[in-house]
Amino acid sequence: MLKNIPPILSPELLKVLAEMGHGDRICIGDGNYPGASTARDANAVFVRADGHGIPELLDAILQVIPLDAYVDTPVMRMEKMDCDKDLPIPVWDEYAEIIAKYDGRGAKAMGSYERFEFYRQARTCYCILQSGETSVYANLILQKGVIK
Image 1 (cartoon, rainbow, N blue to C red):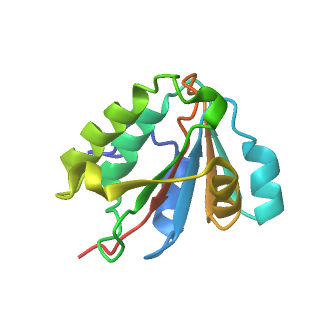
Image 2: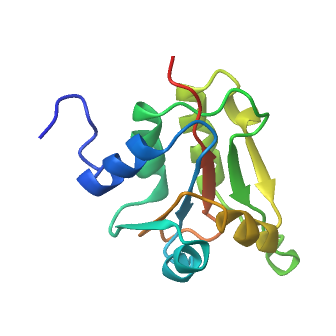
């Protein structure tokens, strides 16, 4: 056990976060996200966080790694498809609040990818973290910054 480490971060996930360097990215997939197959296709590390939602994971991760200050949007979410354009996604507001706690850019640090571009980008991530998040369109990609 370690002091000052959020208990939601498993030893396996802590190891991955420590291994990641500046510019490396981690995809946090919701419960519907094809995490195992994406990780396999990308030759990425696959970590499960069953039973945990993305807001809790995002908050814990941002306590131990910085977001990349050298890119405009180090947090990227998946956009809704046209067929879901009227579907509210309240978890996005939660993300903006959490990001603002750890990054001075606040919500401006978060951008978005079209759904299939998100899948393509996820295949370039160092790690795919499969959560138990039940919200749809809750997927995120975080780009790690420099620890100064």
